Image (tube, rainbow, N blue to C red; front, top):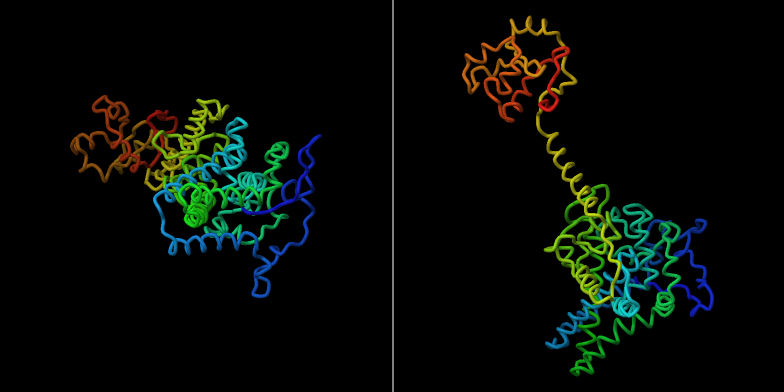
Length: 432
């Protein structure tokens, strides 16, 4: 999240050459790493990421100290909320949907705004963030996933940043497109200045010069606002993999839920996102909360965003239909549908008639049914059913006497005892 990484050459007079950095560019021959060893009382401190951890603990701790020592003014509260949305949308619209997934194209002025806004969220450089996120999508729920949800809710929320990451284990991800962008290379090279300036200095200075509340700006608009932005983003890695529905695919952990969407500026429809990652939307219904989608769409009318990608609606509906069908099938198998037709014994019609002399058998659509337990319950009366014993009642059952309901057909499936050889069952009537 806050990782400071290798220097790069800038500006490029020829194709940009990035200093060797196997964590970002390619896998290397496996070497020993502290994360290969279990955490013990004697080595636990070696497993800790001593850049991330103090910041993840220190920022909220100092912010809460300010909460109890510094009054919150109306102007500062408004500014903190505004800057929360600016920096949060910098991550969701910039880091995530623009640079990680290339879900749309942005004009250069808007890209510059997003670089500045997202830097204020203090979540690492674009190259670092996108590299991990692309690996997350490529290797979801595996050991190569940087924030593998199978390692637990706490790990996917915070643990993967508190503990050192093993570069030998994280899956490869191509970020050559980012390495070719001089602005992204510059932000990566000078990320510390970007993070400090936009994350701490700007919110403090605005409140100080604007209405004389430097300390309020620092505690509320900088530190506490930053705490909320961080955990809103972290919820996408954690809560969005635990809370909600598998609307389009249930083979992996991502889920859809409006609560996560509210917490994460629209990123909570995560099952949709993992199925269709290059779609600029997370929420596809007009009533679903997705301010990131709204921002991208509104700016497209002014030419600041272009080429907004949408996955074909027909394919989206296929995914949803298949999941709905799967849920119906799961409910269906919990019901008793009688013995499957393929498992019934095959009898000749003569054998059927002979058996019917001893048992209460009737034939419907080539299937032999034993109606002994139903004779006295038959809505049409006992006489009619007893007069049908040993006969083929297909025509009578299907409207010749009475066109029976689905309920009657489903009930009859429980009475199956055999199949007439060459009976020619009516396929569209046949049930299992």
